[in-house]
Amino acid sequence: MNRKLLVYSPLIVMVFICIGIYIGYLFFLKKNNFLTDDINVLQKPFKQSSKLQQVLNYIVNYYVDSVKVDSIEEKCINKILEELDPHSTYIPAKDYHTYNDPLEGEYEGIGIEFSIIDDTITVMNVFYGGPSEKLGIIPGDKIVKINDTIVAGVKIKSDEVIKRLKGPKGTKVKVTIKRKISDNLLDFTIVRDKIPLHSIDASLIISKNIGYLKISRFALNTYKEFIDSLKKLKEKNINKWIIDLRGNSGGYMTPAIQIADEFLKKGELIVYTQGRARPKEKIFATNNGIAENDSVIILIDEFSASASEILAGAIQDNDRGLIIGKTSFGKGLVQQPFNFDDGSSLRLTVARYFTPSGRCIQRPFKDLYGYLYYPFVKEDSIKNKKSKIYKTKKGRIVYGNGGITPDIIVDDSINYSKFLNEIYEQSIIYKFAFKYSSKVNKKESNSCLEFFNKLNDEKLLSEFEAFLKSIKFNFTSDDIKSNSDYLLRNIKLLVIRNIYNDWGYYLVFTKLDKAIKLSVEKFSKSMQP
Image (tube, rainbow, N blue to C red; front, side, top):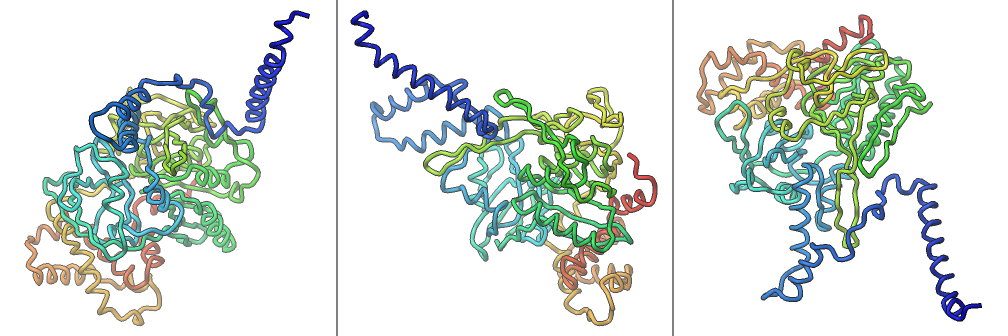
C-alpha cells in the first residue's frame, strides 16, 4: 500500500464522516420540516469576512477614540432595513416586550397601533375603551410631535415611537396630530392607562338568527376567544354571521387562518406564501369547521390589513360569503423573527402571501401613504385599467390593484370640517356625553334599546348647544345643523356606553351602522355573491 495513503487515510476517513454527518443533518431537518419556518441560511452565506465586518474590525482596532460597537451595529442594521421595505424591523433586546405585549398580554400606554408611512407615524387602529379613543383620536391621524418634539420627517424608528408613547398608568404624554382635510394641528394630552387586550370587542345577537362579532386584532388568544363566542351564539340558533374587521390592522397570521378554516370546507385553499428563499407553501382548510354551512359577511375598511386581509380574501375567493365596506389597506408581506443571543430580534420580510385566486394584495409602497388618506371608495376607481383581473372559485372577477376590493362598496367617510376638528381636539363630545349621562336615571327604561329609543334628537342637540355656550366654544347654528346626524350618532353612542358599558354601545352601534344594516338586508335575500 502507498505509504502516503496510509499516513493520510485516517484524515480522509474523518473528512468523509464529517461530510456524511452534514448531509444527514440537512436531510433530517428537511424531512422533519424544521426549515419551513427558519430559512436555510446555509444557502447563500456571507463571505467569512464581509466588508461590513471588516469595517467594524477596523473601527474597533484603529479608530482614534473608543466606540460602542453594539450601538454602531444597531444603526447599521436599521439603515440596511430602510432600504428593503417598511415592515422589516430590528428590535433591540430592551424593547422585546414593548413589541410583543400588545399581542400577548396586558400593557400600559395610550392604546393605539401605528405604522410609519412616508416617514410619518400613522395611527392604524385605536383600541376601543383606551385613553386615545376616549379623547377622539382616530385611525388615519398623523402624529407629527410627541411632547413638542417633531417626529415626522426625521427617520424615526418604530422602537423609538413605542418608547415615547408607552409608559406607566397615570403618566401623561402630549401628541400633536395632523388630520386629513384640516389645516390645523390638533394637540392631545393623553393620560396613559392599562390597555385591555381582548380580541373580540363585541359578540352579540342583532337579529333573529344573525350574530355579530367584532375582531379588533389577531393576537395569541384571538382564535380561542372567537370559538368561545361562536359556540355560545350557535347555542342560540345563530347561523348567519357578520364578522367586523374594520380597523383591524392584523397581527398574527395563524388565528386568521384558523378562523377562515371554521367557515371553509376541507381541502379549500385559505392562503399560500412564497418568497425568494422560501418555496410555495399552501394552507388548506381542514375538517374542523363548525360554521361550514352557515352564512357569513365580512366587513372591511381602509385600515383592515395583513391577517384581516387573509381572512377576507379566503372568504371572497372561495365564494364563501360577501365582503362589504371599503378596499382594505394592502399589506401582503410575511415577516419572520430571527432571534439573536443578546435577546434582540430581526423581523425580516421573507415572503408574500397570496389569496386563493393568486392575488398578492400588497399595495406598492409608494401608494400606501396616499391610499390611507384618500382611499378608493368608488367602484370606478377600483375597476380601472391598471387593475389586474383574477377569478374566484366560481369564476367571479376580483381585482388585484392592492388590498381586498369588497363585493359591495359602502362609503361611510366623514367630512372632518373645522368645526368637527375643534370638537375632537377639545374632546367636547366625550365631555358632554359624560355630563349628560351623569344625570340620567337608568331605572326609567327597561332595556338599553328602550332607553336609546327614548332619546329625543331635538332636546339632545339643544342641550349640546347649551353646553357649547357654557364652555364659550365658538360655533354657528349652521355648524350644528350641517353636522347634526354625526353629532347625534356619536353623542348617543357615548351616552349609551357610559350607562350600559361596551355591550350596550355595540348593541346600539349595530342598529345605526350603514354597513351592518346593509348586511342584515343581504341576509334576508340571496347570499350568493
